[in-house]
Every structure is written in C-alpha cells, then in structure tokens.
Image 1 (tube, rainbow, N blue to C red):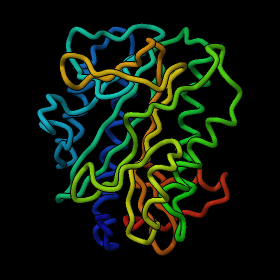
Image 2 (cartoon, rainbow, N blue to C red):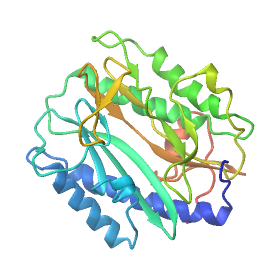
Image 3 (cartoon, one colour):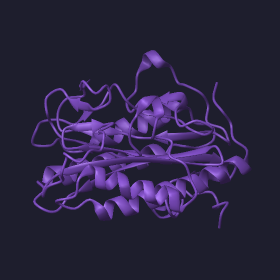
Image 4 (tube, rainbow, N blue to C red):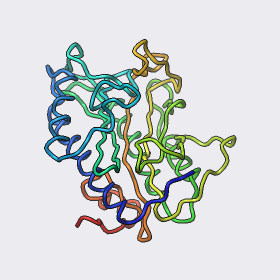
Length: 278
C-alpha cells in the first residue's frame, strides 16, 4: 500500500528534508583531501543533534553510521570509518537522512574531492543529477510511477556515451516511497521494466525518494562481506544523486532542496508547490 500524506504531514517531512540539506551542506564542506569518512559522519551527527532531529540511518537494519559514504567504485551504502581517508581526485557520494516527529527525509549527492578529476567524471555526475531532475519533473498528477522511471532512463540514454562506452544504470537499487518510514512502497526503478507494469497513479499526498545511481560501465553490482558496501562488478566509478519529493495539489515540492526545487524545476517548465514552512 502507498502511504498518502496530509498537508500537515508533508510539512513535517519538509522540516526533516531541510535537516538533510543542512547535513549535505556541512559534509560537502568537510569532504577535503585528508579527511576520513568517519570525520564526515561526525559532522553529520552534530548537524542532526543541533537541529533536534534523529538519524534514520543509524541502526537501520544494523547500519553502524549516520550517513553512507561511497567512494569511487562504491555505488551505495559505504560505511564511514577512520581508515578511509579521502584523497585528491576521489569521487564521493554522501547519502543522508533525518527524522522530525516521526517523519523522514532522505537525499544523496556526489562530491568531487579536491582536484584532478577527469572530464568523464564530471559528466557522469552531471548526467546522474540531471536524470534525477528529469524524474522529479515527471512527478505530476495523473502520471504513474513508470513515468518517473521513463524520464530518468530516457535522459541518460539520450546523452553522448562516455569514453568507457556506456553508462550503466544500476539495476539492483532504486528509489522508494518515504514518509512515516524511510523505505516504503512503491519501489522505483531507474529504468523501464515492462514486467513491473505502470505502477500506481501519482496523486496529491504521494511522496517518493528519487535516486538514480549510474556507473561508467556495468549495471551489475555486488555486496562486500560487511553486508552493506555495494561495488560495481567491473570496478568502474559511479555517481548517486537523490531528493525526496512530495506531490501536492499545487504541484511537486522537493522536500530536501533548500528552495524546494523551485529554481531547477523552473528551467524544466515545472512550477513547484508553495513551501509550507515559508
């Protein structure tokens, strides 16, 4: 069953989303050569505490940290530790979440550590982020879940191929419903699968975390012995971007974007809903 939220519940999710945005702002600044991924986790813990929020990652299924830090060929669910020290040229995805009064926010971004990144890495991150926004733009009354998947995949497939030959749209992980829990129905594929059908119709109160993960090669991944860390099978580097989005009577609201997604969606011809906290 898909959980449909009231405007009051969406407002609480917006509060949680702004905490996530603050985590991203602080950890992005802290992601410099010489910092460990545990240092970033410590930063995130402080932001959550300062906002009177709770972590929805820490302890989730036994996960031992507040954020996920995924470096280079790690796609998602990387565990912060003292041993992983960031260096010039690394590509880092930071996935973060927070809870306010029982309501969840969840978002991810890709960060360039230091300098010296190949142009294809910049393009990889750009393509992944823009495909996320294409998916967000498809969050509209009357559309179905498959329209989000179609928008994400369609954007990626239209881009010039990288030097490695192709972009791999990660198959084993995708977006998800969000609200009174971090992961809820429906599961959102970042590509179209006719086996899954069209999925539920998008109606006001529908909330979804949209999170494409794209590699410079394979779509296939494997999980390491820690039961969390996910790597690409061929060792190619990957990018991960995510926002939590609510559909309201007035249109979409990007709960984890500081401006609610207003500026970016305007370039795509989409008007966002008013911010309930404004």
